[in-house]
Image (tube, rainbow, N blue to C red; front, side, top):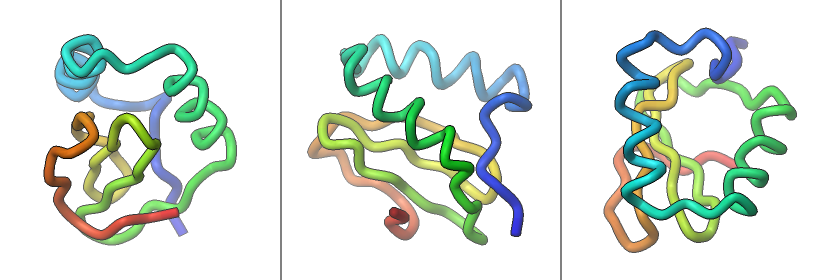
Length: 81
């Protein structure tokens, strides 16, 4: 099964994600949670997905994360663990 990719993200995705992290005021401790999760090599589901990190949600589609939402914003796709 394919893994969710972070190292090989297309430039346009990075250009979208990084400002969202800043706009949503994601803390360094929450980014550390994201980093620890990435190190586990999470499996990429087919279609849209999201992962809840407590104070923010990471949303993606297939192998790629697509955006970061603040807690309380409505994610798209299926929740993954």
